[in-house]
Amino acid sequence: GYGPLVPMRPATHGIFCRILERKTGEPALDAAPIRLLLMPRETGKTTLGTQGYTLQALLRNPDTSILIANEKEDNAKKFLLSIKREFESNELLRALFPELLPDLQSGSTRWSATEIDLRRISRRKEPSVFVTGVGGTVTGMHPDEIICDDLISLEAARNAKVGGRQLMEAVNDWLHTLPF
Image 1 (cartoon, rainbow, N blue to C red):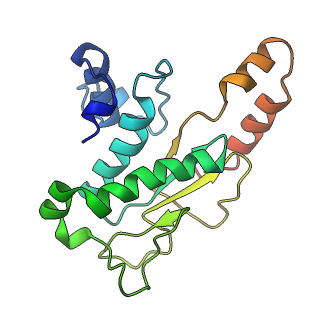
Image 2 (image 1 turned 120 degrees about the vertical axis):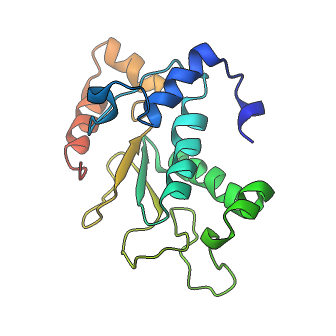
């Protein structure tokens, strides 16, 4: 259902999706433990690469855990809200994967603004998806994947161009604390 939100073009988005799915056919690229994907603003990077990919990864393996990080935790919460809405109201997804849908009526499932759990086989402590902002703590958590989406805002990048490197250095320092 994300198609209408992003004007997708096979030439632009096809290779992006193949890289995300690790299906490029290039072993070094497909097996790389850390990857940096850069796309211009407003081309669907967050919709496809953060939200869509997270949904796909969870449906492939509901025992996985994914951390989504953004410069601001509030933005990461918005990404998670979009993912939650798919599980709550996407009728096709709900029909195809009913065994993964969380039991929200019991009150025992994590389903908040900062973390969610799908039904799992394992009893791991990490949520299916959880979010943080730059500077946030993820001590003791061991996600299978970390998606860093726009850790540096356009404003911060502009400040760095004119010599204001403090935020850039803070982001770099924080990145070294993540459990890669």
